[in-house]
Length: 538
Image (tube, rainbow, N blue to C red; front, side, top):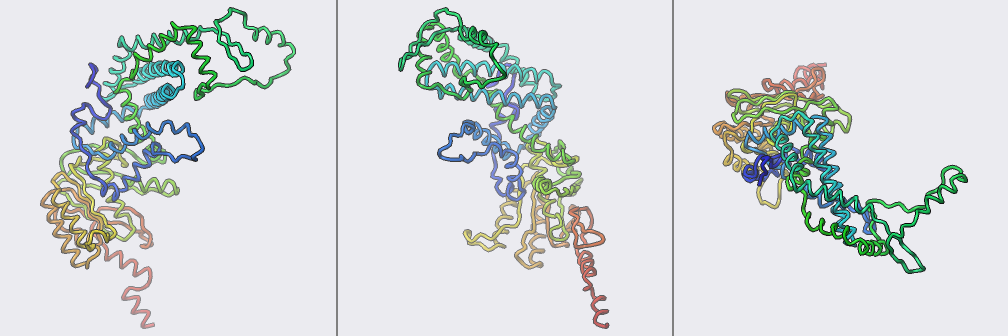
């Protein structure tokens, strides 16, 4: 249900569009493209924490239920690619707005305020005495009010371009102006002021504690401090007990509070009434905003590390038509993170399928970046379909209806199939489901059979995929596949011109030249036919 402001969510414009989404089974895709490693690094802060000891009370773990909720939201959002171009653009526009430094700062402050709100409500629930919990509840109402005011200021001060955040701004303004909110904040502040005026006396006689009305006597502590001030020599230790927000009332303090409430029934009656009437005061969309913000902000924080290292991130242009895929200076996010950790350079590559091109065949030396290119291609398209920035200088990408991966698998004894049969079964499922808007990524298929059989099978599969019209990337050791048909593009992993044993990890568009690479290696190690003949003659 939406309000008059029309705001529903910062990731979906309407509940109907959210309900229309379904989460596909992407376990193979996530495994093959290292997406799980990327997203786990993004939302790792929300993963369950291991308790340090059975005998240690971990107060920080009070947020465990919230972290579990956020983790579930993030996993669903990262695992549900969009197929509606307008939804992708809705999220891209929201992310652009959130990247503004002042607004980003304001949103992080809002999240901290919501954390304070949850803490106050948690103390209300956990309080051992009614009045204690009710007082925490009043704090929670004021924290919520201040959070909304600060959020509204941050939104009003930003040059918002997105429908999502403009609608949010209007929604927050409507909440702040609502009679219910104004009455709640007014009464909460009035209660705080009224309780601050309460005075009472405590008489302690051995084990008996008596709570009395304020005797209207002067505060002798101030008089004593003033009298002895002239004898003070420097700072002295303060022996007064310090109370922290996490402190709970012990049984003596709680019973004193109960008796103070009996002495001031009007104020504490209002306190109890406020607690009853304002139950569940927080707006459901604002609570949802807190969780969905974690998705955007965690991605911003994750990608900032790459940008600080000089690596590009961009908002991709997406299309529903084949023949417009073009990514410049793209890189594998999972590998880039490892390279940055190891202080190694990150190699970027260009890739494109333009016009009538549909099949990209990648050949070259082993461990030369071929599989990384295929992973990068897949990562770009999945992350772009979420409405997020991608790892490239610029990118025009397809918004696919499905993505399929067929990477090499370790033979599984449990399925009672040989490796070749298993490859064929998996490939059959892909061919049966693929459409002209699909992406198919294949890595070293049929490596368990002979080169001749692998070539025959691969050509049959490429013919089927060509007929379907899906965009494909095929990593292979079979150079003959690079010239399969007019829709096929050849990409080759390169080596150092002076030393062919050194991989550059650059993959370029050119004709396959596996034999020339082998000849260069043979020359380096002195085993060409001519070199061998010369050595034999000598």
